[in-house]
Length: 127
Image (cartoon, rainbow, N blue to C red; front, side):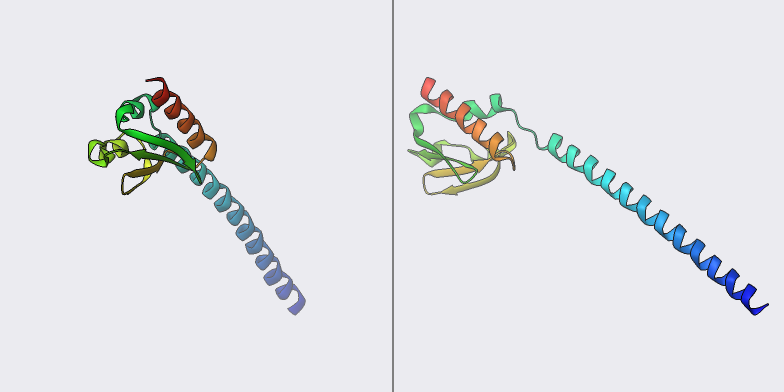
């Protein structure tokens, strides 16, 4: 009789462990789905249009352009002739102005930033 009672209690505990394991797996799957969806929404929200960024740069005001540590660095003759706020509105992030130099990037991906750098350099040199 005592054995039957203990067996039922152990069986109930085993059932709870199974339910907890199933719940943990489901919670993990739902969390992963939410993270993936949020990342896609963030990437779409933070997209930029290269065609809108290029016209912000005036060839007459640019001394040099470099790509350093995932940032595009533009050396300007006069920083007052450049609108950094507009650059931000057009999708650039991580904008830093130091003297007559402006540093920025458009993505966390080094490949994307390097592509933008190359397009910007071609645009500036081809003007």
